[in-house]
Length: 271
Ligand code: PAF
Image (cartoon, rainbow, N blue to C red; front, side):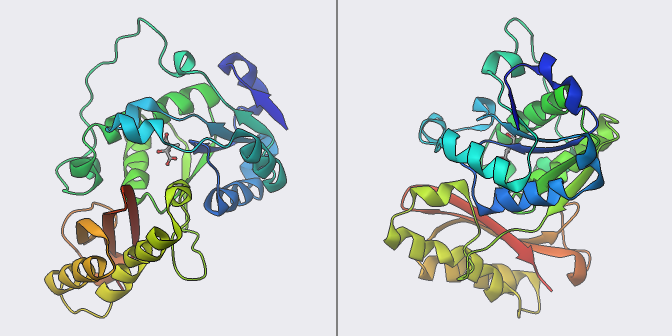
């Protein structure tokens, strides 16, 4: 496995498969990297990028406390079949003196009252960093976790808009046996907060039996509150557009909330 610091050394891995990450890797990332390793694009290389992107943190304290676990990350990548770790410096991703043109984000990331509303500027940062990673790595395929559902739809829209011709694979959320979605932020939870955090996955379950959107959203919200989560949103939306539900089969339940100072998100099917 190669550790590449500069984009100029990425040439041998062009046309491979990319798993973009911000490090602090966990079981969810392991599943993404394993899935990437068994894909046909892996013949050209399995690149895992590790870059904590300052531009996507709307809260500087969140950026400061983002977990950093470099040695463990390398070991996990190696075990899961990565052939290259791309760990650029901020200056490689955002070269000094390069003015960033203002960005009008695709519709899936604007005015939806979801991550776009609660993390102003976040998707601007995600769009810019993923576009830059695609430009530098030039993969044929890239894998993103479904846990960041709105981000996944944004990446799909970006690939279409920018005509990247990259296949985007959405990989299912990895859950612990009690349902908690794997997340780098789980490392920040005390045992008591971890118990409360189960309110997010249970909120999704609570929404499932409900027959209409309003009831489902109310049930999910109440479940989070009852579990000691401070909800930001509990929404049932069309899975592709994140607008109003078109059919139950394509609808998604999306939740976000704070648990003891840590912000968590989750989502799942409604049907
Ligand atoms: O999902 C993440 O970890 C990040 O948003 C990503 C896609 C690596 C961009 O920094």
